[in-house]
Length: 81
Length: 240
Image (cartoon, rainbow over all chains, first blue to last red; front, side):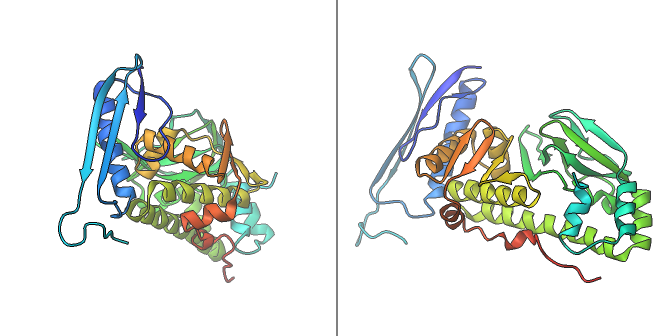
């Protein structure tokens, strides 16, 4: 199975992982993004720019997922607790 | 080595010699299962309940799209499908994770035991209640906790259960579970499991080499996980 390398926006990058094909890597990346967004439990700083990337074995970037979050209005610096 | 079922039940109160004899008798038929083989398949009718003597097993349910969810990890001494005594048809499967030795306990024998031995009956009942309590903890994690808390909680639970059967020493125990299987149990992608375990290692909470987990800072790991072993009811005493 081909090897993929994931880059995540916060914390530690996972070790390279074997997945059957690019579609599986896409599915894994989308789900991972959702899981990491859920893990912040509503406490996402504003502004936030998250970039998830997946590279194939030759180092080519095959996936890019961006999460951009910005509060607008009276108190954009205020964050949930 | 003491009989795993006797050891498990005696934690909840002393057994008479007659009760111990009957437990030995009903669990004398032992069969082996290879890793990945089904011990009790989803959807099948059972006429015997299986007691795990050696090895690790999982409880799992498969979805139509090929995904599966693991809802329990079983260790030696666990009566993995005691519920099939009354429920008969498996609403989930039990599969071997490693080579397993399993005692087959005929439902006809359980019927006789529950007719004649009220204390053993209550002890069996307690085992199913603890199973349910453990499932509630897993559900709470799946519903409300972060990946880090879920994995930390799982490691605390396994440490506690392995210690109770004498299979953990110095905060160290075997955990023959792949990261993919951990993901299937904790509702996480394999890559998320991988990076979260790395973070727990980097933060000095755990160490691991191969399939051995060493908890480096048990108190800190328990605090992170909000782990309180009370739900395992390890020393709950039963009235005679």
